[in-house]
Image 1 (cartoon, rainbow, N blue to C red):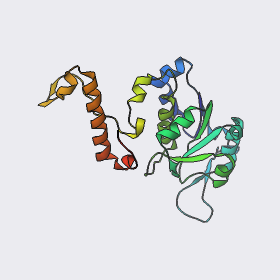
Image 2 (cartoon, one colour):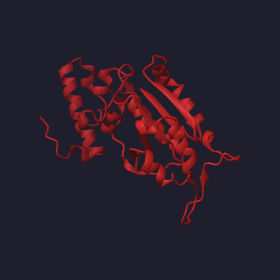
Image 3 (cartoon, rainbow, N blue to C red):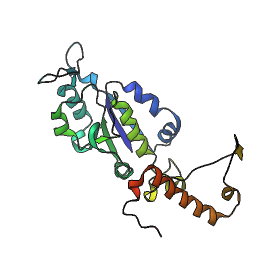
Amino acid sequence: MKFTVLSLFPEILEAYFSSSIMAKAAGKGIVSYANINIRDFARDKHRSCDDAPYGGGAGMVLKPEPLAAALDSVGADCLRTICPSPSGKPFTQDYARSLAAEKEVIIICGRYEGIDQRVLDLYVDDEISVGDYVLSSGEIAAMVIIDAVYRLLDGVITRESLEEESFCGGLLEYPQYTRPEVFRGLKVPEILLSGHHANIQKWRREQSILKTKKNRPELLEGRREN
């Protein structure tokens, strides 16, 4: 799968793509990427990519000409193109799975007060919100989306790990423990030391339900437990 990211600050993304599990996925050929600098498509001597908003108001808006030229250069009209935005639809695990089925995804990193609406109308399939808050950097939001997607690809993370994570089956993940057995007076639950796998699985299921009820009760709405 290929991620093509359009940004004013591609160096932020380069560090992400060349580190940790992502670097290993890229090294195996599971993931490829292209960081496109929007400023390379600006035509004036100052390489301007933003201007004041029509109608007045604070801040600046990304200009349509360089961004559209950058999108044309990567064939965005024929590829799944998304734009992280606080005014977009919520980003969910299901949406991540849908993106993981694509051969290539283009992501536009916004800045300042946003992007000229005409670019969104002409090129973008979905505006996606990674949460009910505002970020200064579209690059951070893009990395959140990319990270949630690429880890679902075959060969990046084991199927077993993916099947036991939060949101798999509509529940949050159960609590995890490792050595030492006692830490600052807190002991690992006895059931996890028992070696009885059926009982451990039952405990983990119960803990998932309890944690979901406490932290995300809306996920339990409409569920019918066996």
